[in-house]
Length: 372
Ligand code: PLP
Image 1 (cartoon, rainbow, N blue to C red):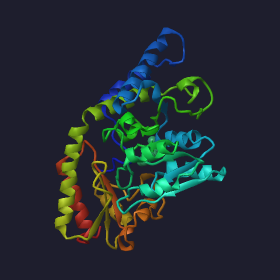
Image 2: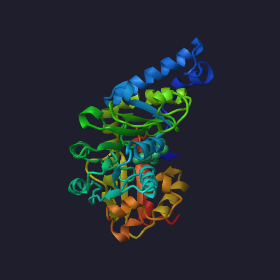
Image 3: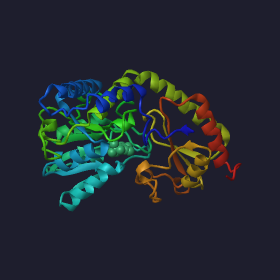
Image 4: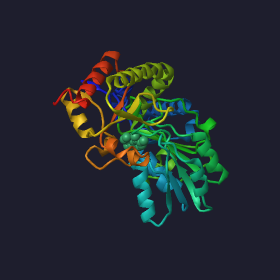
């Protein structure tokens, strides 16, 4: 099997797996309990919070553990926006877009900023869209379908100049590109462990010190009473190990993945197949969105699947929905290409041989040399 759908999820890092085991089998105490058996869990949470904070340039008390990217996004959109209006982009993940829909139903105004052909938000449009009622600007760090990285620092500047909070859904970026929340002046940032070789069902929301946010889940006093519920200690510990490891290897992984990316692009360029590459120069390493003329992404996916090669047609969460992706529409992929879009997303474990095989099989399929 060749796995090239790392934007959907990644393989759990072996060290992260080893790190979580004791907290499932031996040190399984509830971190909220006062007896000494729970001390190991308490210490592990503290250490994980410190390690995660260090990876993104934050303070440990700014990290709130959640169940993943969707929860972190919902917290930011539904709670951090207070009573104010929201501005977001037209290419956000559904975790943000559907949370915004709920806010609209509650009578709040949400504006959706258009993007360029490369998928970059129109900054002038953004600035002109702010009103005195706007409380939150939420723009994703990097897009899951096309990999485009946004001008985060400039967006934060626009938000702060207008007394708004700035939230970024960095689910695709954390662990893959270097992020310093202080340098970028980010107020809230969402991350998800399974996108950086951590386990599924765990993530975090970074909330800058002094930012007024109320509780997302009500119950016990965990996460300073803002996100109640017994902590997923094993998952949190593994998330920290995976993030530390990815951050330490960020340059090495990027170089390796960029090399693999070049192999794919060179092979496609030399094949004579008609295709368009989507996204921008500045993108998440290994996120390759390509559109083939007069073809169906679904057909390509299924034929790759028969060959035991995993790729995606668009957003993973949308694979049952055959509607054309909102991201591809927003970046105006030409009509004769849009349906023939696939996403290959490489990971640190992919090998050169795998990528050569993947591309050769893909070229056979899209050039019609192969009917099955
Ligand atoms: N935001 C982005 C950009 C994503 O790519 C995803 C997952 O695909 C999410 C949010 C949701 O994250 P999770 O799967 O952890 O809920």
